[in-house]
Each structure stands twice: as C-alpha cells, then as structure tokens.
Image 1: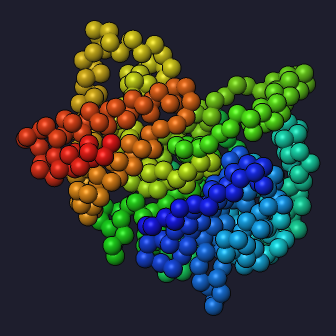
Image 2: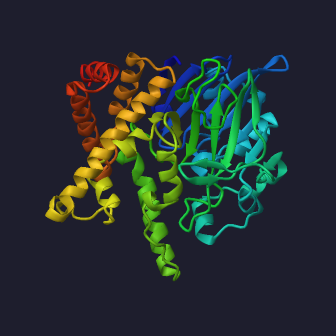
Image 3: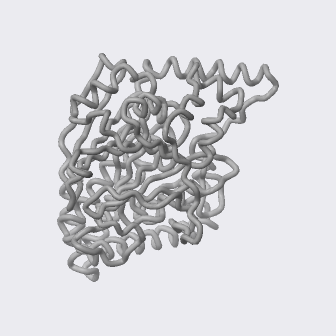
Length: 422
C-alpha cells in the first residue's frame, strides 16, 4: 500500500499534526491518519456510498484542536457534513473530545462500547470529572449514539489465547471491506471501562486464516488499537515543553486526591490490561497497528517470541520484569537462558517460512524485517533499552541464518538482503 508523505501543520495548532493518506489495497477506500502531538490520533476512512463520498472516523480528536479541526479536514478533502459514523475507542478527552462538534455538523452515528453509557449519563467519579475541564459528556445524549451490545451466539474472537468479545455486527465500507469491533476483555486493572478496538480487512475475512484469498495477505489487515497495544507508537514525538501543562495538572490531581483521602494508586501504563496487551502482541503473525498516539507500526508475534530482550527472559524464568538482570548469568540459569534463546531462534525461522507460504517473496520478507528493525526504537528508560537489545538480537539472528549452510537457501537469501539494509 502506497502511503503519501505527510503534510505537517505546526504552530498554528499549538502542537503538530502529521497527515498520511493511502489507498487501501483492492478498494477505492482512502485512509488518512491525523497524527497529533500532543493529543490522540484521528483515523478517517473515505469511500463511495449511494453516489457520494462518505467518511467513517475512528476517534474524534482532542478538544484543544476544536478551532482547527474543520479547516484541517476540509483542506484534506473531508467534508464534515459527509461523516457517516464516529467510532470512539474510549472515553478519554484526547480521543473523544470533538465528538459532539463533529456529530452536530454531520448527524453522524456515534458508535461506542456499552460501558460508555455511564459517561454519557454523567455517572463519572469525582476525580474523573475534574479531568473533564468543563466538558459535559451528557450533551452527547442529544445525538444519534449506538451502544454496541455483545453479539449473542457469535463466537468470541480469540487472539493470542484471550477472548475478545465482538460488539455489534460488522460495518461494511464497500468493495467487500469491513470493520469489526471488539471489546477489551475484563481486567482488574483497566485503562478505562469502555475500551474497544477496531479490525479492518480489505478482504472482508476477519478471522485468522492460514491461506489468504484474492491476493490479500496478513499485512493488508489493520488494527486500530486506541490506547491498548502500545499507547504511543515507535516514533511518537513528545515535547517536554508542551507536556508541562499536563504534568502540572496531573500533579495537582494527585495532591487533590490525596487530600480528599482517596489517593490514586501508582499504576504504570504497562500494567493496565496486561493480559490483553500480551495477547495482541503474540496473536498476529503480521498486522498493521494504528495506535492512539504516534505512528503506525508493524505488529508481529516474531517480536515477543523470536527476539527476547533481557527483561523478556526474566519474565519467562519467573522473575519480576524489572529484576536484577545479573540473575540471568548465574550458573543455575545459564542453561535455561540458552534453551529460551534457542527456542526463540527456531520460532523466528518458522515465522519467516510461514510468511513465505503466504506468498511473500524474499525481497518482501526482507522489507518487513527492515521495518521491524526500524520500528524497534523510541520509548524511554527500560522500554528504550529493550528495543535496542531487540535490534541487536535481530542482527545477530540474521547473521546466524546467513551463515547456516544447512538451512534453507531462501532463509539465507532473506538474511543477506536484510543485513545489507540494517
């Protein structure tokens, strides 16, 4: 899929917006990514329906851009009056803050998780109300809003061993392309109570498939993950200066909650919806991921299963993820670590052979690996360190593949091509 280089809007937005457009494979559907920093991303499908160009939004954007969103859309060929539906991934204002404005202009249907009803009814906690900064979610009651119900008699969507409940039916975008909406599984530690994710397939076949049809392959499918799978994509631009107001507000929020006698527990983003996040990371051979913040990246189970950073090894051996990594070098662990690394290598090679069975040639597989190497960047602290280790592991694995004279010729060819590019 050809992606046009983005337009960049800067100071006039009090931040940045990078815009990318592509024609989705095998369709007349255009997809635009509005990547805001700061703020949540907005994704727009544009397609023909009943003789006119219509649009489906995934998330509506941050309220701080309310004076700029309409001009931004019009400059990119999107008439707000032609919006057909707005799918909201969750209730946070950086993702749903412009929903009323867009619905008022278009009459679009607002599509949400059933847990979003409490938000619209005004049943929000005091600390959450403080974050709304005067925004009144009950105003959405005046618009066409659909609370997606779990589908009775429909098989759960099992991803990585975890069941994701389907919500509502599929949404047809024409040309056989469809959107499927899934609820985030229940968790004791959730980002919000109303998270959903959206799956897109140009083939209309949203179930896992070992054999592709009509020329479509796994990396043609897209998942819109909101704040679930990598809240911030690999190249997310975070300006310390622009984050100061948010940091100060969060500090006041904590002080206020402590003074009220209801201190907020310190929970890292990584710990929220942990099982669902791990399931998504291990549940796809290949899929394009559109996160709530930052750029698209390629999701593949080859990363968590075939490229084990030191912290991954700690977890697999039963230690805390942020434990002392010197434990890995102790005599009673050395053989276990080597066994895990060997299993990871075999998994890596098996995945490449599977990609080949799906019709990817050596050059295409090499391109996918180059992309994975490039996207294992960014983050802070331990996340940044993990990604640096995975890039080194990817190179070392490819060197081993290239030098393995007993291995398949195709794998050696892939390794050679990739090493020349990374």
